[in-house]
Image 1 (cartoon, rainbow, N blue to C red):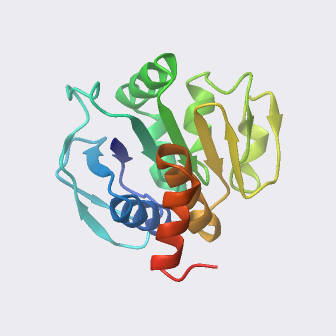
Image 2: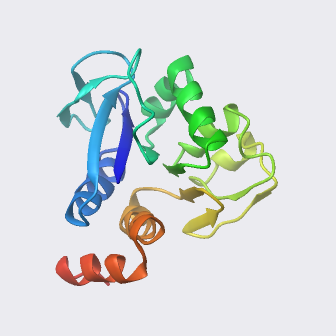
Length: 181
């Protein structure tokens, strides 16, 4: 399975690194798409990441899922991209996996795909969500969409992504490998 990460300047590092690492450990192929088109994106705390390709004009059809890390500035940059919205809507229309953490569910909300969903997000962002139901659970799965609260839930989020993609047994295997709680 192939997972596409949508990367924008201002991403929250923990919300990127943890799912990226754990998904790769689980055997999934991960690709990083630059929303700005620049080869390098910079996280909210200065971490520089080399992306694999620019999102604009990229063929994303081969991917089985898309992941959006949070971070205030990163999410603003994701929300400002028509390419991001198109990918999200296309993936949702095809019932592919959509993973969003922290404030990133706001990007899904802007795309209009949460109106009949139960979701969670970073505390305080829920006022902007247009969804069926907001809950304060640390990780929420509703159909093909998985949402989570923030950097402190990144590990649980990553394990849930793995469980949805490859099963609970695989998620537990990775949990044991990294000595997670």
